[in-house]
Length: 466
Image (cartoon, rainbow, N blue to C red; front, side):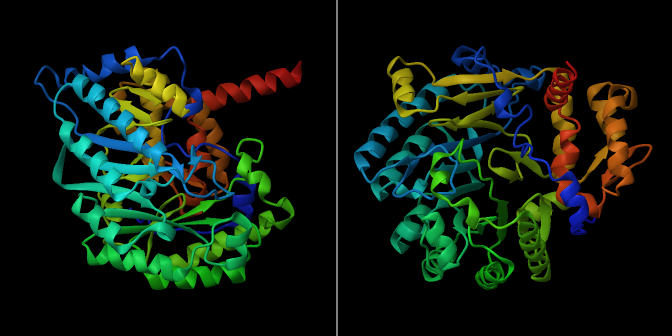
């Protein structure tokens, strides 16, 4: 697999640049149903070893904890967050997280070995050092964080001391994700996130000093006042910082869905053409600097675990993006967090009040989810293979799911023919390969296999006819 091969074709990108899911799950979270409730999640937690053929086997565990608090608001952000400086709120939240951890752990069938842990938000490092110690103690009370596991945390370097970085390492964290977005002062002012290069560098140096094995930086393109010249300066600084991984996300301006974005002046946003130029520049600069294109908006050094996993065909996607742990059940804690257990997804309630109310009743705070059908599982494996490896073995899918691929997916193969003619992919007797021109558009290719999107498009077409 020559996954580093990538051709930037602006005309094709413009043609196929449709808004669509990031496929951190399939079905996507907007397809979850409220008929899936806490009792269903409980049922699947207690059945984790059943899939092991009666041998008492169970998949390893990945844990996610959502910590929604932030000291200040970043105007671009569409995450589930709470802006506050009151640590009374986070102290209360940790007490309820402890209760949720205990309830879930009491139901978990099989091994409680954890291979992956991620703290996301919000801003996880909003927690005081004592709060962080308490939360990790609660986790370790109920779960076994195995030696050599991947334990990561998202941090905001504007309020992160060297001592706290040292504490995070002592608590077991070994990977860190740092939000940067852009180093240009004018862009930072327009999105209300003033963050100096020195602050960012100091946190990275501390992380390396205390033994973090991986540091990831997040950038966003499409923000107000960005242009090729200014973003090139940011890329100079980022490449000099030499992160192990880099994500370059496309800013989605949806002020009707994300209220803070109403404070961004639309007239200041770069044009679609300028955005493409910025993206093209970023891809060229990262590859010249020796980074491997992992997929969508992710880059990694060739010796990073993500790049190695992709070369070995073991890359996976989950709610934190690309991952090296394909076979883990994901248990998620806190408001709006999404779990994946066996053939199910379950999502927690979104507000603190609802979260506390459920746990006060000794109920898990699950508000919706889904049990995947055989068709969902089939399509999830196809979308995952395309998103992670840019290729799909038709024979492997047929053997795993007991189908005849060409008859089962006749409409999809028809739809892919136009993409094949455009040079995005190649359909062979036993393989579908995403070509270098199609790699940036892999989401659009994956969308062809999304039955829910297809049904929606059919409905829309039908209603237009009427």
